[in-house]
Image 1: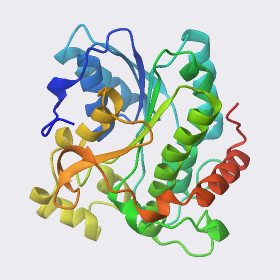
Image 2 (image 1 turned 120 degrees about the vertical axis):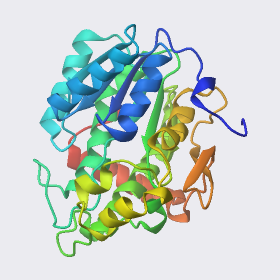
Image 3 (image 1 turned 90 degrees about the vertical axis):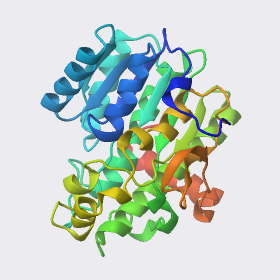
Image 4 (image 1 turned 30 degrees about the horizontal axis):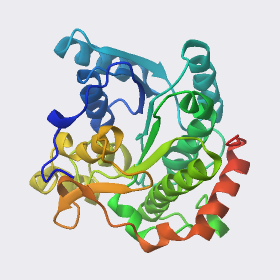
Length: 305
């Protein structure tokens, strides 16, 4: 891998269709870079106004960009199904899916439309259901990839099968860490199943280190301890352009390995350039990964077939 891999090294993406979940922060930057590289990009999010603004901004900077917005609420299984049905009607294949959108540490327990704890339901289960229903379109692409975004918080995560939805005890950061560990377990297990079933999908995990996005303000709140840290110690957070690099590397670099995990290379993976990231021990537990997959199929009502 290049010592200092940057956006300038992204291979030409003309002819590839990419879906990026999330309209701001890392999602926006990832979509912008992919569009600038020639990909046809669909920015998928739940806020139509923010989505339209993101598309307009990208087009204003690069008028030739092939970028559109599509409505997708990852906290709603019906919205996910509707999004996938619309896509199947209009697209023959999907080359790249980037499971990025997230909610972080709301102070009070919130639920999705279907009754799941908001972080587990949005960050993980929504993307699980999305990937399952896009599987036919992904398999129709010549070299499909699925990039699932985790977090350094996954290191402290634990899959609590006895209380997956944090109904008995809700701790904001513990629930967030569980959701991001679930994302990494899913990324690794998806690659195992792709290889075993001949799906030809390259599944790769990535994390952005500690980056300056609106995730904390939108979740924990601007006046929370994390929000105040973000505001007054902004210099500890790397720019979003830097944080997006591991995601873009996983999405486009020829040398990015199937089943691998990438993040920044400096200061405990909090900042820097893309490099192989340390996979937490609990993310390597195949028994947990298989059980989580089975439970997730039941909860989301989907099958990877």
